[in-house]
Length: 244
Image (cartoon, rainbow, N blue to C red; front, side, top):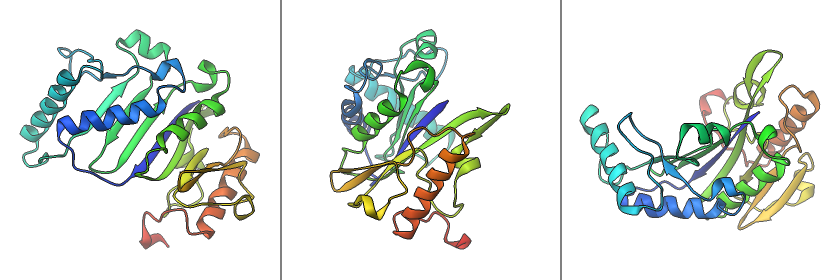
């Protein structure tokens, strides 16, 4: 099973140097959750590129600037001042990356989206729910985060399925999925469908179900009921008002 944590936050326009600073802050929030998340490298953009340790500030800033320039040359006007983004992995080689579950971290400040993808979590980590919850706690400690969700990808009866594509409740709203965060204080009696609630900063962390197996009818139904409860509270963002 693969899991993707997605954080939505207030958008920012950042220069390459500011992008490095912002990325270092995000990474520091999850570095102590597991040894696999202590050190990060840039993703090479071609066969002639090397993976650069995030700690090497000047080289990473140059890497981001080069990517901006290449994109602007291919699509003139697409990159303006402060439109940087970054894509990282937690390993310097393909072999080590595969061994660690092909983890990737993509941060796009201009669109206000962060995606942390974790592969083979049930195989690699003895307590995957605890790990993902800890990562969610770290990422949502950034006060800019307004909503977070966790998608799951899994093979069910020979077919690849995702919670977002095959098991979510609403097509016109965001989904919460396995676990997530809402930018509002919640008490247990307001969302009794959830497996766990935890006050976090000015908002609430929500564990919809202890283990979200896409082939587990009971677990999926509990996640669905949690999303319905959030929608009734006005805490599940609308993505397409035309479908309401």
